[in-house]
Length: 243
Image (cartoon, rainbow, N blue to C red; front, top):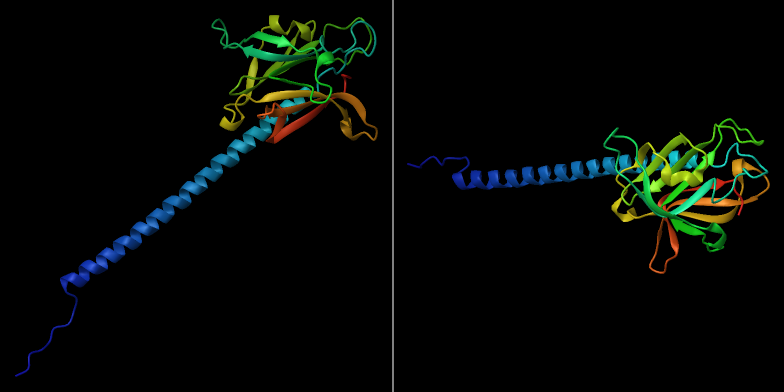
């Protein structure tokens, strides 16, 4: 009498199947984790680059105020060293303990642009400018004079908000309020500089170039000391100031 053979899965077959299934699930989970990581990194990078571009654009717009509305002739006409201060080694203090807002430029050396390199200009970490929103161009200068500025602190790009002043050369005695345009600056760009150099500019898409001071930021000095612009950088022509 023949025995009936039993058909089905034995324990070893089940264990092998479960192992293969587990490996497949783990591989899918690893792939999912990688995809999510790449997605999050891309989103963070896009946000960071967007904030950086927005901050630099805001700085560029603020810089275009420099020298606006100042007299074209006379003792109070717009002048580098009085209405445009190019400052090396500037140090921005922490917010005041009294009001939690005001800050001061506690250190820094104004650069004499008349003796700066005629091609490269100067590499600095702060620039302070004056302007007159009332657009009065006759003497005496009205009391609408305002000062504004930009500072690279090493880890952040800070906008010094416009405030009433007599002239930009008073930068060290002013109590500034500020806003961080980029904070923190990318590690690769920490210690970045502002380059101020003479150049021919075409402000507001004019057909004829004008000789003016040009501001490029952020830039860093390479091993040879030559300034190199960052991947995302902005150039602004200060049409109201001539070399």
